[in-house]
Image 1 (cartoon, rainbow, N blue to C red):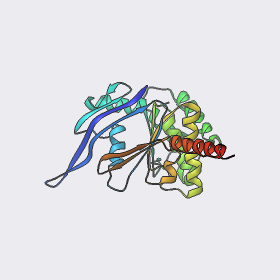
Image 2: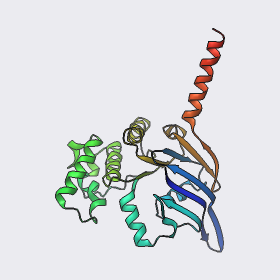
Image 3: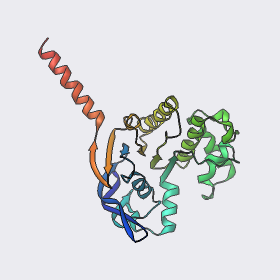
Image 4: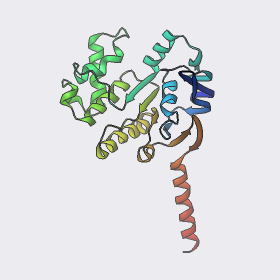
Length: 246
């Protein structure tokens, strides 16, 4: 069943008198439970695409349905409610509030939901414990490593139990070892809970964790592949060839 349905999506903006077409006629469907990486060189439109999917920007033309809601035509107040209830965001630079503890940072998406402090605290601790950070709940961001800060950011994205987890270059500020840890978390969230994940990256080793890789260039989809399926087919082919000569 489709979670994201995009048809002929376009987005343009102006620089002076010049119109720039950042997204140019993209049609794409993402099923519930998919793990999709969006790749492309600088200027390909991948960040703009993520902003459109995350309801942080509105398309110039075309349609975008999220969970059967045509969000491309939703009012600003409705979009804010959709972002809060259905979407979780993870950013490259973590975007944690420095004066709040890890637990308080995780609670931020719940502040405008009419949830009691006790329930916010319970849910934040549950999310932190899921990410292995229960013992660091009272620490501030400056007392945490980069990997720990990103795990707090992931816990914050998960605390509302969103339908879709969106990540914008989630390993861009991390070293290679910590990047592997963070991507293993996304992989586990997708495999164990069926969480739909869509992330933007320019790194092929990060995209390799996804089950599907969509490549953009000049605002268009130029490739849409399932690398894990291709690897399985190649492995089966090698096995068949080995059996034929044994």
